Length: 250
Image 1 (cartoon, rainbow, N blue to C red):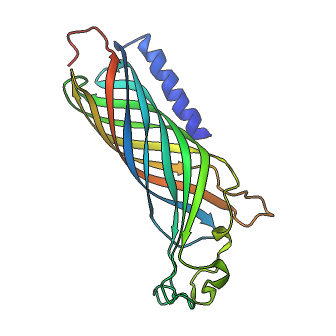
Image 2: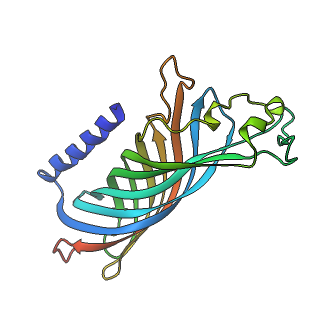
Image 3: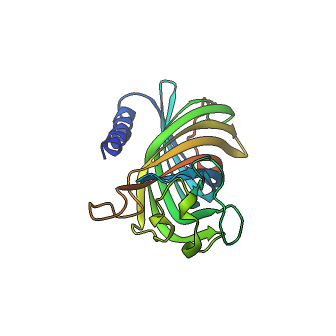
């Protein structure tokens, strides 16, 4: 919550600065984007994992309010469908794959979770606004609404090879997501290429840290923590609906 308050304070400060110093902007652009995600879940007790690879796609919008000295100040928001989750790293104490005694194959387990995600960013950019390259950073809160989940494994839970596993934590394999709203902080940096007539193309890397948990975490519950984390590489395209009438803007 402290981080959220700091970000909100930053956005209010930008608005206040607009009334005092800076070059006025009134640009509004919309579009969409696609992304590739690597995610896992911070379980406590710990569950050994590999990175789970997923996808995201959705809509995006950006309002640019001013250029403050060399910094281009904006607020952006997205509405994305995302597939995240976790993939368990099932190994023996000798770092060998756990072999299922029934199928004779290495055991595999992963959970896919589907969300409608809404991140809102305070954005700062440096460079060209309408023709050329711009570097930017952005950060802000993100909320996700649970849509569903799917489990993928190659063994029956009643026939899992628990004896050979390094980790004996298996409760998560059969537990459905209990908390349907996820929330946290997202931050990233990237490059934007702009063309006056075509629009804006952005390539960005961002990191999301969940402040909520997938499962209840009271003293009576199994997990004390179960928060999502994501690494995202995203490509976004925006086209201008409204542009500031100023021939000096480059």
